[in-house]
Length: 261
Image (cartoon, rainbow, N blue to C red; front, side, top):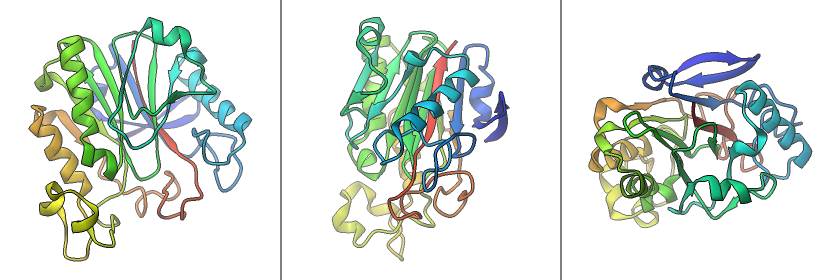
């Protein structure tokens, strides 16, 4: 990832997606640049972590200003670790209320310009997808529960069916998230599906990064079209990124977003 700034707001971007900057904008936001107070300091984007609602809305306003977005066009969800996908079209946008968010959704897909799709993460993977042929984007929230349900594959299936996207055309970035160094499970063989068995290490950690990469490859995405941040949110970016595990559940969420131009 490359560190940049938007109107003094620090952001991180994927090299591969930067090549399409005239068509699509994207960012992995950090925990820096907002107004939230401890322990949510400072750019928390989640409305469901006991942070001040007004502070969160102010943080989202800062993001919208940095990316020249209408505030109603920053679309987020009440994420539930599901594989539910929401298609963002004009009808959906007409009903969307930012304070209430979209309920029970963990992936968004759209071909509407000027609409930012944002997932909220703190150890889970924020996955952004762009098809430069059909001009379609997706944003996916994938923790281990989402990976077990193949939420990324569900988003790709919607892109194929609704927008005629070919997986081999997709450009994908995966945010900082829980790395194989810190993804401890009490008993991963019991907690996870059999698909995870090859990714379980001797110390009961699980390589969720490689699992995610291999899962996307099985859907037809090209390996050189996937850029994994390879930054562990728990041990590799405490001053930059929130971590649910490191902070024992009392923390904010950083955003991973993508928008068609």
